[in-house]
Image (cartoon, rainbow, N blue to C red; front, side, top):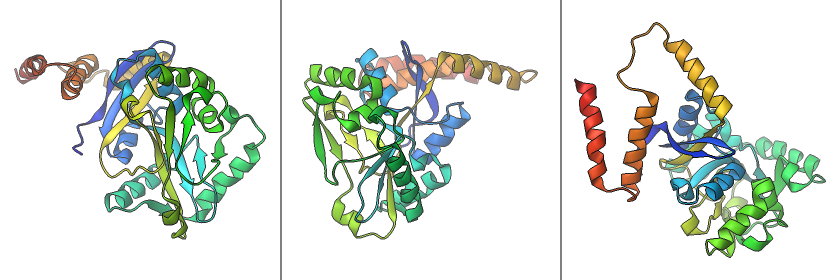
Length: 286
């Protein structure tokens, strides 16, 4: 897939949450782009679920990588971590490189063991208070949307929004949410631990939770800035640019142009709207 925009663009302002930005790039590049922009990590599954319920007609309904990640090891249960090991930029680069060669990324067993220890330490906590959970099985399965308030995985991922998001999916005609995992025969054929990043599918794909998706092409990664963070970021940018040459455009203008291009690409705006982008670019040349 073509990498369409590495620079984060404003996707939506979400009531009670903040500003959701989008970058489309290989995962390691997306991490760097978000962090350069002042966003430390991709959006959590909980916050993306909440944003979808608040902005159901926005492009947030499309798929996105989140900050959670899966860990696999031969003859061991599947783990799901709130903070994926692939948030480490070094591991992310290695994962993208491996995935682009057609392989899952594998690394030292010690990474899996570290997260397994956390899962054991947290196992007596409520699911929404754990750092890592052990999945109930090793094969793909489905979770009924009317049981999101009971299921460990949905409570872990969506936390206080679990029941609300389940109801939202039900209202959108989704009765079950699939969970996709790396094939167990493949996992058991490898000596090392396998790491993947969670992809939350679009609503028209039943909001599937994918733990078997590679990072071998540029795709959507969202990040969140709370309103206080946005103010701090603006002040930081202002101090950095103080005394420098003033640019002939603002960040807001760039974000508006990006939004138009995104909506034309997604078919929600006609191509005639690109005239506005062309006029904007023409002014920059003058």
